[in-house]
Image 1 (cartoon, helix red, strand yellow):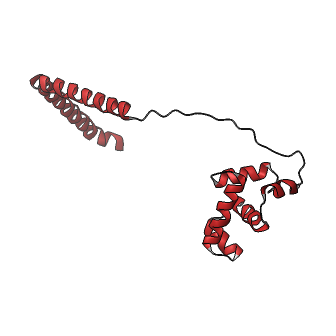
Image 2: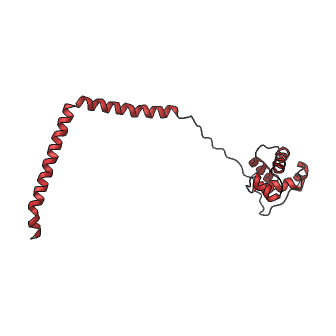
Image 3: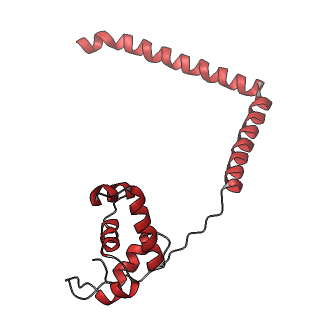
Length: 154
C-alpha cells in the first residue's frame, strides 16, 4: 500500500531527471559544436604542455650510473676473538689508541669518545689522526675494517 503511494512521486522524479539529463546533453552538444575549434586547440595545448614537462624532466635528470660492488667479508672461522699482538706491535699502536679504536668501532662520536675516556675533544682528535696514519687509512670505516682484518678489534 505504501509503495503505491510513492510510485507517482518516484516516476515524476525519474521523468524530471531524464529531462534534465537530456537538456544538459543538448547544451553540451551545442557548446561543443559552437566552440569546437577552442576545445581542439585547448586539447592540443594541454598535450604539448604535458609533453614539454615530460621532456624537460627527462633531459634535466642527471645521468646516474649505479654500480654494484661485491666485496669479500673477512670472518674468522672460530667464534672466539683472538687478539693479534704482532700486528699491534708492528703498527706501534699505544694502548690508548687501541682503546679509542675499539670505542670508535661501536659508533661513538668524537664528543662521546672524549666523555667516555675523560679526555678533551682535541686529545681524541689527535688519537684518531695518529690511528689513521698508523693504519694508513683516511676514514673511520676504513680504520675499523682494517683493524678487524688485522684482528686488533672484534
